[in-house]
Amino acid sequence: MTHADPDRAARGRNDRPAHPAYLTAADLDRRLGDPEDDGRLFSHARCAALDEREEFPLDICRELDVLGLPAHYVPTAHGGTLDSYEQVLQLMRAVARRDLTVAIAHGKTFLGAVSVWVGGSAEQAGELAAAVLGGAVVSWGLTERDHGSDLLAGEVRAGRTTDGYLVNGEKWLINNANRGHLICLLARTADEGGARDFSLLMIDKQRLGRPGYRPLPAVRLHGIRGADISGAAFTDAEVPATALVGAEGSGTETVLKSLQLTRILCASLSLGAADNALDLAAGFALERESYGRRLAELPQTRRMLAESYADVLLAEAVTLVSTRSIHALTGELAVVSAVTKYFVPTLVDEAITRLGTVLGARSLLADGTHRHGRFQKVQRDHRIVGIFDGNTLVNLHALINQLPLLARQLKRRTVDAAGLAGAADLAAPLPGFDRDRLSLLPRTGSSLLQALAGGVEELTALAADGAVPDSLARRAQAVRAAVDGLAVELAAHRPTPVEVPAAAFALAERYAAGYAASAAIHLWLRNRAAPGPGPGAGLWAEGLWLEAALARVLGRLAPGRPDPQDDVLDRLVPVLTEQLRAGTLPSLLHYPLVKGAA
Image 1 (cartoon, rainbow, N blue to C red):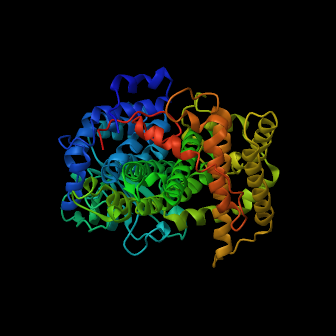
Image 2: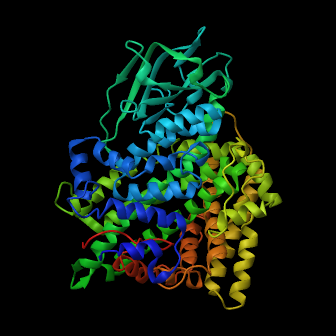
Image 3: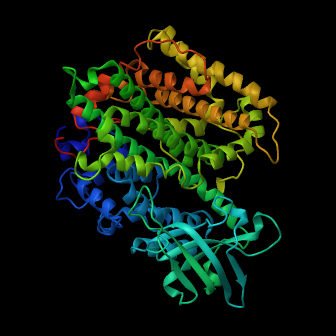
């Protein structure tokens, strides 16, 4: 591994333009310094030691504050620098690549504040923005000990008083519940038996006296051991009326709309974890000898590396398009967010497990035995990402509830052409985020999946002209055939109000796979001319990464259908090797890393 030149990092290797969000994240990386330098505050060695002691990364979070990361959690309209959710995602990915615990601990402030950006008044948003920019930590009090993801069963109550509310009850398994200065609390304000029974209160804990507020002890965790995952207990806590976010009874709607943003941005945690795991496993395979050959030269190892690399690139493609959809296809986020939150963490979990096989026993070593025990830590830490902001089953269930609507729109193939172009074309200017366009139902379905046929036809024409291999067109056509079959099954699906059959979950999983395939196709089509020479450029030539991604996703779309065996995955390994040896991120786009020799 080689050191990246900071000046080159700023302008892009070989003067090739880099995507602005990636440049911003690379700049943060550069200012944080080499994570393999044990003397750095935010180093792999320090994060491993904190994890071993189950200690909160307070000093590292303070450094991120000094470097201005909290400003990226605050919209520009309220005095921050958040005008592109792409930028937030890449910044959090950069932090998560170094350490998931830090990313989760620091990034929680965005999750805690987002309900005010989505549903609060301008005055309330301004006050919260000033607090966040001043260093306040915000937590999000949604879940309870006995109810988990069932938010409508919540028992924490906020009773009306002359001056505000009296809050009673406990919230549990809340990130930064102890360390947070403010908590955005979902509380019951009525008993009518529906979603309108709940309201959101932004509570300043520093203004609550005991016994009104009592912190609950942090729980011990298998992963992210140093994070503050704890709880808060309220006993007749007096909260002013000004703490109410939006109208009384709007809490559930505001939370669900806010989750459309946070579920997509959780993909930053998965991508950061995947970056870390792929770097460790591929670096080891390139250096280690077995049976007189480099480990990376052995067929089985090459296959596992290629499959994992293809999966990570597919996850990145989905995340890029979904994040841009926050701006470009805002009304469709109910489906986009559920797909992304299910698909990306699931894909990355599988890739990390596979990469652990490449490392063998070293994947289990802790302490300073091998690379500060980074692999076993990232594997432990990432398992919790699938639980945050609605677990895998919750997100699949959200898709299942939308299947009748999605089936109708898939049959009609209606497409928001302008929105689709904005989501897929990385050079296209994005409109500002408009919270009023958020909807609990994606009335137009998914423009991305509904545009699959057009994308496949475009690839087929390119193959006919010799611009891409026939094998790429064949795989794209196989994806289209699988989605056409899925559309027939979706049209025949009849929702059940109580017991959801396993077949419905399988339909939702295949819908997500179809979305992922279409995201990859449209991302490649709209950006294939942009990458110039340099590490990773071979990924875009003749659609290499796209063909590999489609080969991987076909197994999910059409289980049991044989995929023609050729060398598409094997052809990925030289590009992965080139990116690693050049000191750039194994990624679809140019990203120079700041790291030392392995």
